[in-house]
Amino acid sequence: MLNGLNTFQIVVGGVVAAFVLLLVLGSIRNLISKRDGVIWSLVGLATLIAILQPGITTKAASALGIGRGADLVFYVAILLMFLGFWMTYMRLRHLRKEMTSLVRHIAILQAEEGVGKGKNVETSKSQNVGT
Amino acid sequence: MKQVDAIEENSLGALPTEVKARTFVVIPAYNEGPALAEVVAEVRRHFDHVVVVDDGSRDNTHAVALDCARYVLKHLINRGQGAAIQTGIEFALIRGADFVVTFDADGQHRVEDIPALLAPILNGDVDIALGSRFLGSATDLPATRRLVLKAGVWFTRIFNGVRLTDAHNGLRAFSRKAAQRIHIRQDRMAHASEIIDLIRETELPFVEVPVTIRYTEYSLAKGQSARGALRIAFHYLVGKMVD
View 1 (cartoon, chains in turn orange, brown):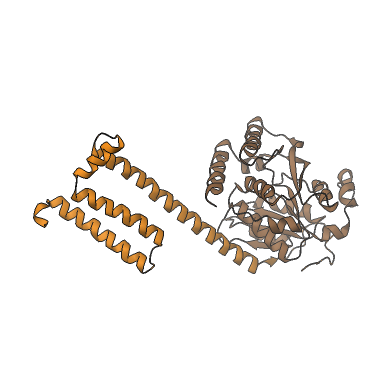
View 2 (cartoon, chains in turn orange, cyan):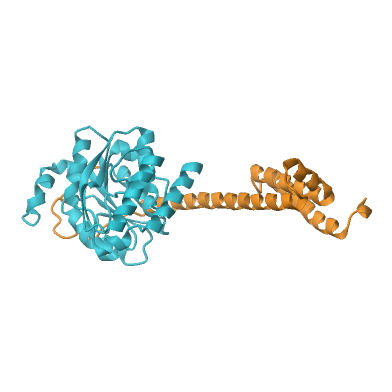
């Protein structure tokens, strides 16, 4: 079967296939989230199909009213890139929130009582209610 | 009380000592070394429970705070003003605060305005009082800054659906109940708009109270430019979409 494939298909197809395999194994072993595993495995599989059956992109393109298969691949690639950016940004936000909780927790645990009394403090006599 | 602030002492003097003792004033501070001591000293003349949250400052803010504030909390890493306020509020609640006031470290707020913010909460009319410079007065407010703030007010009207005269004022007072229910997740400057959202969502009664903002060269440099405001709007909208 490999006889029918050109060098590009063998090399890039092999890399993408290995990538999909890693994603599948990774999500089974919980190294990556199931959601990410499914999304990027599907993207990898679609890429693999497009590599092995180049004609299919042209058919899909004309079905969607886009001229050439290569154009469709280009548009999809840009959309996926944005998806990737967005997911990374969300991950970053999540990390920031976790960092804030941690920093807040430490700040409260290590709260210090001021040593000075400030200037002309009048109302500070023995009013430690609630402490 | 004292003659120094004779004109404005009346309202502060009228505020029962017991109320002052149950009030925690939270001051978030990021690189506020130059202004902090004076601001904290002014607040502490009337309120003992002053909590300075040093938001990972690289200047002497922490040392200054230790010298004048009652409590000093330190963010090991800068997390933004919203995060610092939330940290201060949580600490105040742990220490049993019945009223929490947020106050800026740059000297733009006046301690004399605090009684007016606490009054409607004390009466039981509302749980939250928001300071408004446009109901009150803003001294030496440049036209461009006024424009940015007014844009913020309209932004709030459109996206929060709440009509306010001043949506981005750091001087606020919360009842204990409100402080417990308002949890700020916007770590940076978008917390001001977020608080308005939280007020609407929690349906806590609130009121705007006229306050005076003193604009100085220092506080203006610390404030938001139009560009900064756009960045804040972006953070706010993303937070609204995904949180």
